[in-house]
Amino acid sequence: MEKAREFQKNIYFCFIDYAKAFDCVDHNKLWKILKEMGIPDHLTCLLRNLYAGQEATVRIGHETTDWFQIGKGVRQGCILSPCLFNFYAEYIMRNAGLEEAQTGIKIARGNINYLRYADDTTLMAESEEELKSLLMKVKVESE
Image 1 (cartoon, rainbow, N blue to C red):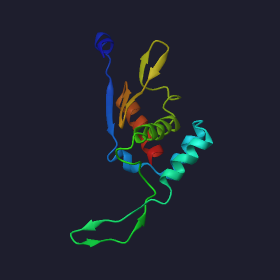
Image 2 (cartoon, helix red, strand yellow):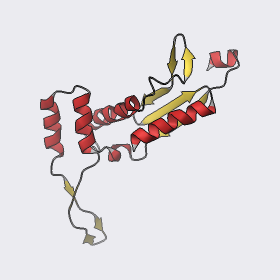
Image 3 (cartoon, rainbow, N blue to C red):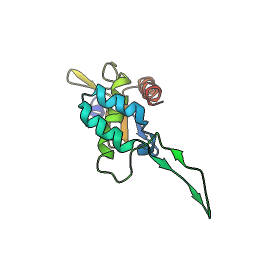
């Protein structure tokens, strides 16, 4: 940012915070992602078994709903959940094609167009149009 000021260049930021981040992880997509990212099959199998057959019911006052299958979300409070979410989020960013995009902040011989920490992502560009393009790529891949 200091160099941008020095050279009087604009930098545009878009801050993304996935609402209910842990709840949005689709299990079937997660297993595919883990395989594609090189996680050994025996570890993925352990995780599948951990998440297999999960059911829940909702209590409202004195009434409860019927039991239903849970096919999304990583477990709140589980030590593995942040790691699993990070695999999921990193896959989205890689598949959005941001690394190949010739957009972002030019530093040395490369571009930086996103930063991630936990469930927060920051997109960066040198124009509003570039930023919109990056955001659309992430949006499409996140759906």
